[in-house]
Amino acid sequence: MQPLNVLVRDVLVADAPEVARLLTSLGYEWPADKIAARISQFLAGGERALVATQASGSSPEHLLGLLSLHVTPVLHRAGPVGRLTTLVVDESVRGQGVGRALVTAAEHIFAASGCVLIEVTSNKRRADAHAFYERLGYVGTSLRFAKTIAPGPR
Ligand SMILES: CC(C)(COP(=O)(O)OP(=O)(O)OC[C@H]1O[C@@H](n2cnc3c(N)ncnc32)[C@H](O)[C@@H]1OP(=O)(O)O)[C@@H](O)C(=O)NCCC(=O)NCCS
Image (cartoon, rainbow, N blue to C red; front, side, top):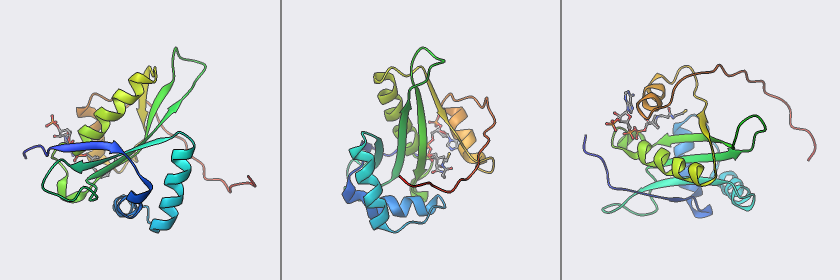
């Protein structure tokens, strides 16, 4: 399929309904007001999330994809580790370069932050995503051990 002409920009609080829509397609259903509050917190804390829109021919508010990222300082490497924390592309435009555009933009941010490694966790059942990451040069090296906990008082 022909690649789409994609613009990547930082997320805005006003994107909340579209972000909520994309997260729902990833299996995380949250109301837009909760997502708006999270985006506000995210931005206030210096965290970043990127969104993709179509460069022309579509409403600039309509999001094609979402990627959130985090720069993790570590002691055991020469520089921080960049982590892709969410990535989803609208089902209707998958396979047209949107995911690649978002990851490439994140890679530039990580490089500018001095990161020496980029990592991403992907559920074992997401075989398509694994093929995508491998295509972009990512190598499956680790197992993830996860445990849910009850949040304590802040
Ligand atoms: C995985 C996902 C983000 C990929 O985004 P996308 O926009 O469809 O991918 P792109 O079109 O940018 O593809 C980039 C490259 O990966 C390849 N690729 C993408 N999906 C692939 C697949 N399932 N199998 C093999 N290669 C694949 C493309 O062919 C392309 O290669 P090329 O640029 O050399 O032609 C998207 O399919 C998605 O949102 N999936 C559901 C949610 C998900 O799994 N998110 C990841 C959670 S960890």
